[in-house]
Amino acid sequence: MSASSRNLRYIIIGAGMAGILAGIRLRERGEENFVIYEKGDGVGGTWRENTYPGVACDTPAHSYSYSFAFNPEWSAFYAPGSEIRGYFEKMTDRFGVRDFIRFNTEIASCRFEDGRWHVTTRDGEEDVADVLVAATGVLHHPSIPDIPGLADFQGKCFHSARWDHDIDYARQRVGVIGNGSTGVQIVAALAGKVQRLVHFQRSPQWIMPCPDTRYSEDDKQAFRTDPQRIEDVRSGPEAQARRGRFLAAIIDANSPELAEIQSIVEQNLENSVRDPALREKLRPNYRAACKRMVFSPNYYEKVQDPTVYVDTSGIERIESDGVRMRDGSFHPLDVLVLATGFKADAFVRPMTITGRDGADLNTLWAQHPKAYYAVTVPDFPNFFMLNGPTGPVGNFSLIDIAERQWNYIEQLVALLRSGRCTEVSPSHAALEHYEALRTEAAKKTVFASGCSSWYLDAEGVPQVWPWPYEHFMEVMEKPNLDDYELTAA
Ligand code: NAP
Image 1 (cartoon, rainbow, N blue to C red):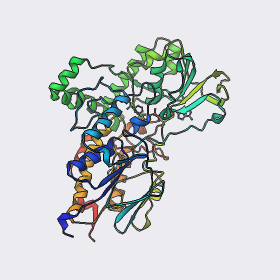
Image 2 (cartoon, helix red, strand yellow):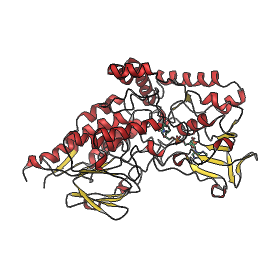
Image 3 (cartoon, rainbow, N blue to C red):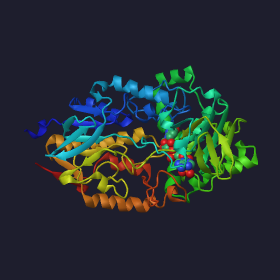
């Protein structure tokens, strides 16, 4: 085969934001030999799965869009989830990616053998490709809490990512367990609209106030005629200042930027919650941004609605008709919502991924999931992850992250396409070096400053990108091939 004529076949797993991006980029290059496997029946990943009331993205909508497909039609500064899903549906069609997606097809295993990836679906179908891209998302395996009696509850009980739309909520007494970004959005949306709402909080959250700006027709027209206005929302001085402050704060828990954020959230609590007893219930005992920052324009206002009760006294057990607290009090409930988060360390699992010479990803990830610069894994040649472990997650646009990662992946794939090598993967030494530096830096971030969160691994070390975002942008510009093993056939 002539080196320059190597026609690669690609398998992409997941048709969320990142998988669609991969499809768009491949089509742009004129590549047609690829398939995107999607376990669900539609595109949009997290935005397909999360349909709870109030679901929205707390990254500004114009930043939460592909850099090559601005959307002047966003209805608000922070777009609702259904609109974001609609955007991805539209992009899938606009860029001709839909025909490449196999819906309702879950991948069970991937095996690197004879220089290619052999992929098996849950139904036992097999497919083969040269390049495997996991675009499987970060937070999609619901975490069901281990609370005694949960199975005994006789009312409706479901996880926030499995919202039951068949209930007439106006007539119900609803309990929401969990006050991360999801629980806060649900409670703010349901307050005053159900008979009674109880918000169960194990640890209070700092709430960052944010504007509830809706875009008027005039605003949209201005975005349509002048894309620079969109660019300004994405990366104008205000956006840069916001991002800069947040970044400086998270990588240095003693920075003046974190002190400023701390002061904003404390003021928000002081100024928004009138009842001193409720205010104290809602006051966290850890630093702002230690858990992922929750943004809300109206949570404090809504939680003071007379139909809402915040309980921080600790759940003793769930009974058939409600929730018993440790202080003996009882909340009779018809509906119990588990806004209890996700198994954040799952990534590609429960799929099994077997690399070169039988290397097992589960074994490599026994301690915690890891990947060289969040994208590649030693002994797993021609395997790439979008939004994989230790990338910059949190209050960033995962779209910008995935676009930069794709740029990096493309350069490694180009080595395969050109025939310079048939297998590309990072060395073990490179991953170890990266992990050593990353772990040291992660221990100094605000995420390690004394709270529980889904960022932390079993040993309490944040599984995050611990450096400035600029460093991420820089390393994603061009892979350092000294850290890679290139194998020729
Ligand atoms: P989360 O941040 O992990 O929060 C889970 C909540 O459930 C916490 O309040 C936790 O309490 C509570 N919880 C868990 N187990 C419990 C138990 N056994 N008993 C009592 N309480 C329990 O989950 P999430 O709110 O679904 O958010 C996950 C992530 O999704 C976010 O951090 C964010 O990255 C993303 N998200 C983003 C948006 C957005 O607007 N962009 C919206 C929603 C979600 P503790 O704090 O005490 O552990």
